Length: 193
Image (cartoon, rainbow, N blue to C red; front, side):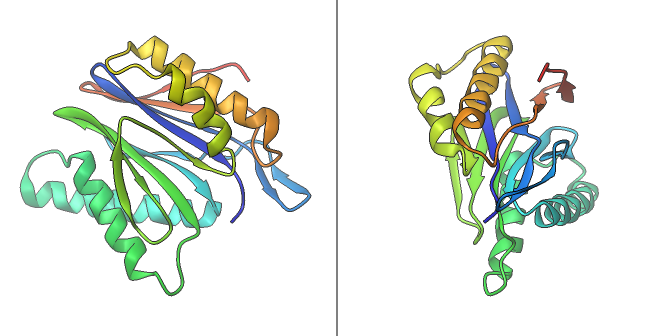
């Protein structure tokens, strides 16, 4: 699977999703400015690692399904429902899988994060990392994560996790995309490379 690093962190009242921007296939650096964080609904987002085309089609299809579901239910779709829809779609394609790992996170009620593998397994957690740099990122997240941390602390931790991975994983690097989700909705956070 092509490399990347993405992290998700819950904090008091919200979720931070972050990813780096590099796409590399083998020894070839394809792009230094690729988005791997996606807003699915106004309150739910996803951060991905793997094949970019698979990430993009998955996020677009789930976003459309979530809009339809919201019209049916007449309420916002929580992150666990988005994760389950994504899981179902990924499992349906298990014989020709979408080559992506995903962190779904958001706030409808309480902040929540779910990690999905290529076959659609859904694992809830307070923080997560996926991709070829996940081990390095988790080496930073594990000892420093604190439940109920502030948004600023969560952003700083996500940045440190991604940067740690980028130092040791040649498939990761070239800046960050950060998406913050809270009760007011989603917003991008500008971050220096």
